[in-house]
Image (cartoon, rainbow, N blue to C red; front, top):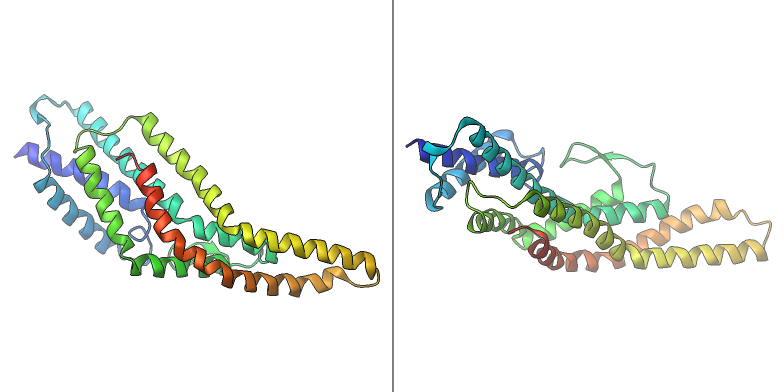
Length: 247
């Protein structure tokens, strides 16, 4: 009986740590009771169907604490990797906003309760709608299941593997965000060249005054061409998750 209880605690520790940072499940708009109930139900189900090769009688209090710490670290690492990859579209939107001059604009993000920019939040909402319509949240549940197939409760990857996956996911977040925003950067680079030529041809023209509405208009036009890339990133997100997650 004690072995089953301890196995359930280990499973609940990993899932709870994962839910702290996992997209969709970690949003503040979801009530805490719903999160706790979901974590407990998943922990009960997984601890029932997953064998736990652990002899509780030979585990001391210190070893039990270390096992729980390892489970929490593994869950946080999985959640951080998913969070970094999920933030690619929002980060691309922030890059575009800086080119448009919207860096100082700020709104309240209803999902996280933090300050955010309007365009990046809009692109994130579009990505979330596409992601959920493609049953992407089922992917997160599949991650939980596969993590216990690869590493049952009481066994986790080494710290080097976990930190390496998180660091690689962070680097991939910036690379993927830049890759999505490259067409917009090219358009604004061309705009800068054109404005520079106009400044030389017509010196009396107030380039700064003219460039502000032009940059906003060009940014909105480029965002419409940016949307198909957001749709395509949903499948790329699944591929990156499969490559980077320590499963």
